[in-house]
Length: 207
Length: 195
Image: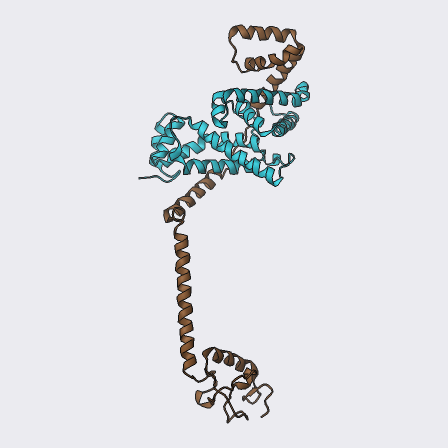
């Protein structure tokens, strides 16, 4: 019998017994009708994808919509996943494609504004240890500047910089996600880093 | 230094830990000697550190609830077959069109039947059918309201006409309602008609 998404206690128990099943195991279980496995995938990837998409599109609200759509696509197209590829590559590809579509849509409508990044909606995780309001404000401003400069990069550099230096994915994985050769990925990452360091070096000198 | 431009790629490989031991030593040596490359290296390392330590954001608390609701809606729609069978839509449209045509023909036939058989006026509830005269309508008459006949014992009118079609019957009934008024004594008086 197919379980309801996030509602089966029996399946939750069986899931708890497994010691962190791999993403590929989870999607396989989900393909066989185990909706609790899908629940686990959502829990595992929701924040990770949100951070990737947020850095890419610049707005938290839109990023959340894109992540929702990403999981809906995974749900609908679960049969399309083949175990030959890493699940993370597959889900990042979906999220990346949706983000690029969003950026193209914005460009068409000419609605994109660098100032409208939705900073006010951001939910910062601040450690209570050695909390200093001055440092905090400075840190927030600095992060806003970095975030803004990431968004000022062209999408092809922005995407690889986020995947490589924020998400810390390997060049091989990035190459599969954005479907370009590894050499091109490396070249884009290097050029993106050079651009960023050029724009942010005044900030780095302050530190 | 002009050779630094080509050396930059090696610096990035060094940053990513992709260089073999021998090449790493060469990079370290170059960085110690070249202030420009050294500055780039320091800046890139700092930016990279900043990017890796950016505060992470979290999805809103209702994220999973919203997702579950959207999935449930999709499931219920696909169970109904609404999404899977778009072919049904033209079928529904065709059925509706047929029903409309059938209704149109039935109504037309009944109209023709009524026009062949002369029928009395549909009498308003305050009158009995015997109180109406059923004379023939004058051909080519324009003033429809004048064709209406009212009970002769109450209204001082004569030369009434009969109405043949049911459509006309409905129109005249409505007109009759609009042109008559009730006088204080409780009698019904058509507007503009003297007693």
